[in-house]
Length: 517
Image (cartoon, rainbow, N blue to C red; front, side):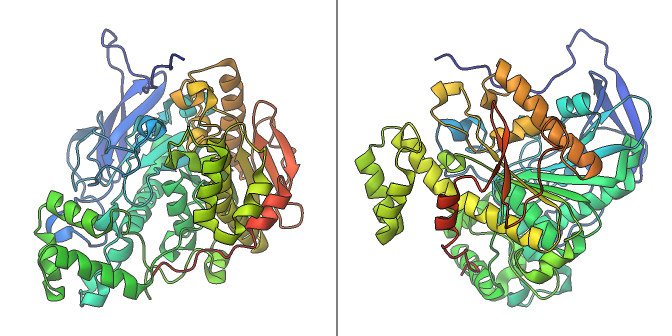
């Protein structure tokens, strides 16, 4: 079937005179472009460049500039390499290549703001943290454009960029690094803390309410929000959280993280004592060496100062128990990671035997007839094991700690490609940002328009009041481990209690991941 044209954010036609919006920030005056009544400010720097001597150090607030800074174009994209995931769907959502806008570079601590230009009043603020694990991605990608969300729901939308992979998560403490490199193991998270602090001090100038800041992230963005909920330095900088397909990341212990750093040095022909030379190595060479050690291996690790706890630690849960949280998955989240459309039932049995051993028969029986193809059945099984199980555990833990918690599952199937990807990974990103014309949603079909209107209203209401809004918000019961209320988002969105309970009970018998070694 013909596919819809990929979405691009709205732009001002070339024959229209440009309309500017100026804002005075604590670091200087900036100018953005007004598009459909929304002030769009791209590439606002909140931190100093993090290359050279600043590499692997905690971020430093951007020095004030004189005069006016034009913020018309995105800033640099954090250094990264293309993901090893490469299939049609992954290419569509830009997981197989580094975004090109702004180019790759270490002057990457920037954010993009989409602010309504109507009557001045304090509006809710929605901060989008991009996906891509801890390794790739950018808030500059078109899928995070906030123009339509700001226009439709009168909220200020912010997309924030930060360090990734080896640049954001290289543990140096065990190698004798001095205090200037404290937190190198979570530098990417500290970037987010600095960016959120900049917003606290400046978002009112854009018409945003600094006391109503919601962080929202999908996949790797959800991991980062799960981490921020456990990070002492982030407390008080946001007031609600939306974790989409990114529950319960597991951080490496300090010893394992230190060993990874030693392996990186060895790949570069250096010894452990040579770690200071990492600041001098070409960005591309460092990236190439990190890929050989493990492209996805660099992630936050625990320490005694900055990141003392795993996100599921009771002390971390108590730290953020006051933060209302929406947690979600999609029904076929895992389908992104394979392209086995010709999979047969016999082939699926073989896959299950390889992955789950003695449990393969029980799993096959649980999911027999669950989906129209073996590919989608495989996607549901791996989703329930690798995504939903962790989302339920996070919901159980946060609700048990007293945090107001809501759970949803995105069940609506993308009509593109004859629906073969099902309710796929990242479909709810476009819906959450009020963009029904996104290719992931089939290009503004009638059903997509209505579902997106409902879903984005839910997110906007949550950002405004800490309670889901829209037509389904009022009847959406909070989650707890007894009722397990879950909103099933589809053409006939409905509230269910413990949906697919037999499968849920099976997977929750599986142990949760332990600290990565």
